[in-house]
Amino acid sequence: MAVSSPVPLLRRMAAALCRYTVESAGILWERVRLTLVGRRSTPELLNAAQTLSAEARAVHIDAGADSEALCYLLRSRCGIAASSRPVKDGEGFYDVYILFEEPERKLFVPDGAPVLNLTGGIPALTGGMVIDGALLEPPRSMRRDWPESCDNAAMLAALLATEQISVGEIGILGLTNGGSPVKING
Image (tube, rainbow, N blue to C red):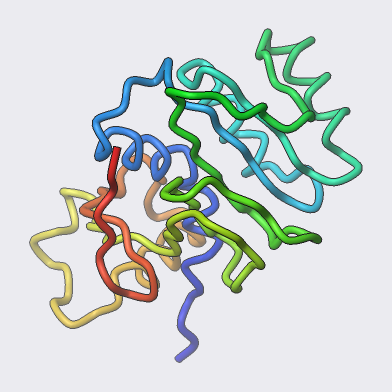
């Protein structure tokens, strides 16, 4: 039996994972600078930008050749102040990076900044605190009959792919890197 990859599930959960990260750190959203990285515009990247831009102080889109067009779309249709230019250094901000695809060049991330690596690979990074997974729990309606020894992420990915559950029904218990729990610092 083929195991479903959790990568598409995690990409669809990008906004929820980012919220969990910021709230776990105890950071106010007006102090958050968000950078979304991909090689191109994807529905998951666009959804995360739309969802999180109402909360984050600044949103930077690094989606290759699609960056400017995506920022224009977000500004004109959604009223979202997104920029394709890198966020300038500044004191007092909490930087969060979401990687939807591996960047084409090495990414320089401030030390300690959370990097939600939703690529399924190992991107070239300098600095940052990598988060490549999450401890997930099934919807309340399924918890009673949930198999104890299953891979929750794979099972939830399969259920999501077959439209038996929605992203909003999945709970986040924690964040991981290489399967080990990650403590978020603010």
